Amino acid sequence: MNWWEQELSGVGYRIYGEPEPPRLVFEGSLRLNGMAEYQPLTDWLGQIVAAAPPQMILDVRSLKFLNSSGINVLSRFVIQVRQKGNIHLTVRCNDGIPWQHKSLVNLQRLLPTLDLDFCHEF
Image (tube, rainbow, N blue to C red; front, side, top):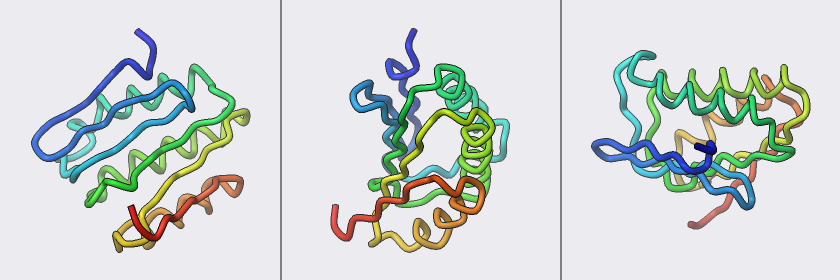
């Protein structure tokens, strides 16, 4: 199974992949308890790094909430992308969701080439 053919969903959230352009879409509110519950997402992100698409988009414009464990998962993914060295990563964000601006700008410290694309309405 290709990484974009997967989907994770649970109470209040859905994550799915799309092959063209390569992107992972996050919707809802991700409030999983600890790293163990985030392991399926961590494994999926690892598959994406292993596949090494030339470009990758994380689309979080519809993600209303992400807890600290989820932010940690995204931070680790960004570090893996930096270490891989051949994936151009873009994070599409919603400027109207306060946690995104506060937390996602920190990802650029981990990967200076990361593109943060803030839309004002979505």
